[in-house]
Image (cartoon, rainbow, N blue to C red; front, side, top):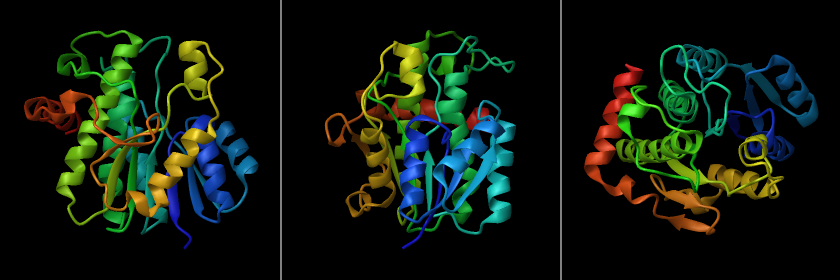
Length: 259
């Protein structure tokens, strides 16, 4: 069955390969990126039934407008893959004072998901990109009141998105399915090359698990779960995700910043 699927950050890396494989399988793929030129190149490269949407996810206003643009064209979105993410940037502090890693990796997916939920059917899927790198969240840093280094901010932003995956799933007992996925460590993405200076492993490792999370029956009853592709199984996230007071503090901070 043909599905309409949005993949954020789909102009390079895992996102581009995921989009290419989904389009080749006959699905309608909505591509997202910051650069209009890179989006055009990606669309030509992928072919098939694709649409392009340009938005800078470090701006929550642009993120909201991006969601509204999709809703203006579509009354149904079967799958949302929140793939876009950042690790190392020259200046991580935005004019708002917030850390760009938290904004792009956690807040923007939250805004996008909330605004698109009305058109995602109960049979749909929301796939959130987590990571093997997870760390307890310093809420003051998430709110822009303290500074973190690149990996600290990245790892905390990835635990934060994993926590709200759990919370969103709990609020949607009849669907859609919401899962967090570590696509695999040190894959050959631009982020890995720039962040760690290594070529990285086959991107198909990550793309294939994102497609499985989006479409396969094995994920149909796993809402709220975390899949660790390094281990090849559903696993427990960082223990802080199981601390109710920590989850509450993280969610209160996200909701306060988004409101």
